[in-house]
Length: 127
Image (cartoon, rainbow, N blue to C red; front, side, top):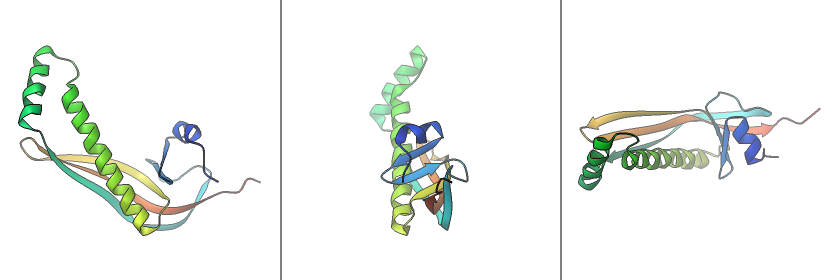
């Protein structure tokens, strides 16, 4: 039995493609049956000349620089999805301790890493 998405969201757990993910090191109402290994998704992105130009224009007016926000969101989502694929290949149905890191590789080139521990979980039967 899987939690419904609204319950999962309230508990800080995301459910996507039958993989539960959480930043904590346990899943409420679940027992870890097997721990696999660290799984990760790595994406290296650069800003385009056009994106840099429009981003530069947005800095003149201040506020949220939406072109960079969208680029960051897409990059994080791609890294997350790569991590999910890796976990599924191992036979995991959950990832615990999910984290993001990023580092500038070169000026305008950023690596985004999404990682966590792939596990196999089972729901705890109610008493």
